[in-house]
Length: 337
Image (cartoon, rainbow, N blue to C red; front, side):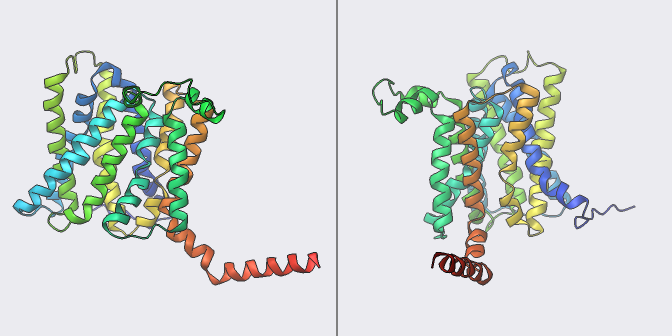
């Protein structure tokens, strides 16, 4: 008996479309809930290593696995370094020092960096709405990542009462998450190059396996007591983050991408931090300051503007909208004179 998922069903379509972002957001909360019972590098490795094996098994089952050339392995190695080791390592270390919701916001600001890198590498046009989104995003990230006292003093024109320290800045979990976001952005713009030599699903599986193995090596070299404090609930949370937050979320994401839903996916990126913020508050009692909430709001707006800049530009330049503006201007002119 063959089961076929009817993606076009009006009932299943929105659920499947939202699922990856729900899983990624809640996986952040699950990891944050147990991070202090383990170590960050071990947590990062145990999350992605088994997920990579699952992705490779799915690739073999779907007949996507083929011979990989030496150049393909080189790209997989670079992808593993940037999007496996660095991204997951910074994420784990950042999660020790910040809330799950704020961390998710910082990580999902990566479309800002992707837009800049794509402009540089692929000559993609950012446009007015994209640059506006970047500007708003910088303000939002600053409100989230910088200490409230520093921002308030600067706003009042007092630039001398706070001593600035780069060490303190990068001990701040939000900025470690920003480094994770930048690593993820570099990995994202590498995908077109990787896809020329390796199937992207296969590359995803291998980069999770290799990146996870490297994280285990670093963990056993620099960390201790990785699992002795983990109880049954903690292992359940890790299993959820591994299977649902990594393997299934990646699988659904690639399924949606293969169906041509890239515009919908990019528009829904901001749902991940919303889920993380919501469940972080409900399950972990995480709270934000007023300035941080303002930063979250601005960052989500910037992500939407960056991802939807082409659609927004088309809306404001289409003929119907132009005619509508002309009617308003004529009415204003008539009322004035």
